[in-house]
Amino acid sequence: CNQKLISPLYHSKLSVIFTMIILFTYLFYCLNGYCDSLPRPLGEYNASQVSIVREQLSDLSNSDAPSNNISIANNFGSKKFPQAIIIGVKKGGTRALLEFLRIHPDVRAVGSEPHFFDRFYDKGLEWYRNLMPRTLEGQITMEKTPSYFITKEAPRRVFSMSRHTKLIVVVRDPVTRAVSDYTQTLSKSPGLPSFQNLAFRNATTGLIDTSWSAVRIGIYAKHLENWLRFFPLSRLLFVSGERLVTDPAGEMGRVQDFLGLKRVVTDKHFYFNQTKGFPCLKKPEGSSRPRCLGKSKGRPHPQIPSEVLLRLRDFYRPFNLKFYQMTGHNFGWD
Image (spheres, rainbow, N blue to C red):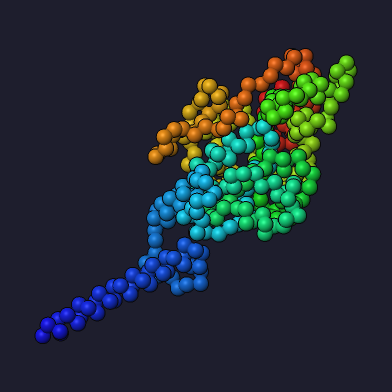
């Protein structure tokens, strides 16, 4: 009699265990991207559950954990070519933009600058794709390398990868940008000649030396012409470096719209750091302090004679006006 009672209970437990094994096996294959080859389960996850899982995985994989620690999220998703690239400009605010974007759960970005389309193109597209973080369905892969904007070969190379790539250019008053560029170089090479000695071919005539990279980068109209040979204007978004400081939430709203993302990054994420002179990210939950950009950001600029800055401003004025016309946006630098 006891044997008859125990047997159905025993078989019931075996059935439950077997079912659980099947479910766990299915979930394992799904999270590794093999769901398309497996039969669909009877029950489907709802949208909110998927969103929660995606946000949790994104938080893990966007963390600044050391590279020798294996992130759980690295086992999920797949590596894809970036759907969006921050292509410029140096000392315009590209690092700030990338860090602000990485708050978004649907953005996965390379932390360092790959320099694939300007320095390492001969390594091949597969090498480039392997540098990318893994993404889940619905997430965007991104990278930023500011020197792409001024690299003649970059537009054709990006186009060859994908003509649908979205391009973001962070621009800043070219005079201020040039001084900031010089300041960064000066911090690494204290024996550098003065700004005015590098900016002018002839100080007497006021002839600007456009071969100096700090000056050349700020001729935005010239570089943009190169990109418009391959990409329509609708594929490019121009972010104001000044507004990224004075109104980071507003500028981030434009960026998220351009990328087709929900506006998750808002004014609740920012506070203005009076010491550094630019916005920082508020303290995330579980963190001991707010997140500000590194010590290299917000350096005090050296004193440049006003007449030097005026001459440089006169030099840039026609290029700025052309850039305003090309982009349909007045950045107010003049």
